[in-house]
Length: 307
Image (cartoon, rainbow, N blue to C red):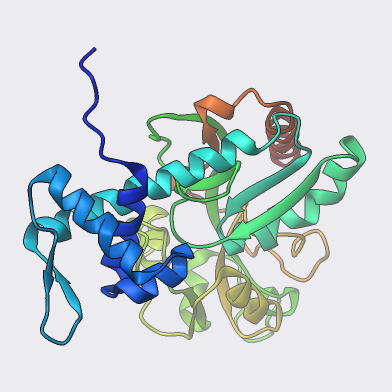
């Protein structure tokens, strides 16, 4: 293997900090050294590369050269990955604290209500829930396991299918038996308010127009009705008798079991995405991760048997 040509780490850290602040004094404050020391490290790196990375401005400020700009972006990413790798190396293999990342709707509607079962099964395993809409970057984030909605293609990650998602109509029991327009079949939806979830950022997500087309119902205006940014808000509106919502077997929570919502008809449509449990291959066999993965897969199987 050829020998790596790596400049001194100290010079790289000084350059990366200076590139972010575009100010040697503020970079020095971050690194707990003087501005002069930062400048010396930057000069040392420029000499090592044989290229200027900064243009010194008359106002005593600095600006990145074209080469410096490209190099700074690459170095920032490398240092972020080095920081993450170091944090993982320092984390004990036997750590009993696990950080699980997922989307807010799945966390509130499915995962959190079941954590008591995990505590009973593994009382010494502490789980921290991290929520967000973006895909987890295991190389940059302090996350051990993620539950993702997608198609299952995650190179470099251990991937286990958690559950498939199906969509069906839900509303309050009172609305099912509406005295004027009872909900006996999907065509009856033309007489009721449709509740929508805003899902512009998820391609091919099952919306009312796709759902009705899939079950062969035409002539219903799917543009009408209020829209909500989260699943639980549209379900709450449906439970309050404000209309009919589309729910999924994954995110329905206990609304059906508690009688707060009812299914007016049995029709359901399978979604194009499924839910997966994923983690880096390098940590997939860590005991705490194995325990969580086995537990969450068992919970999903049990939920599927009850539905």
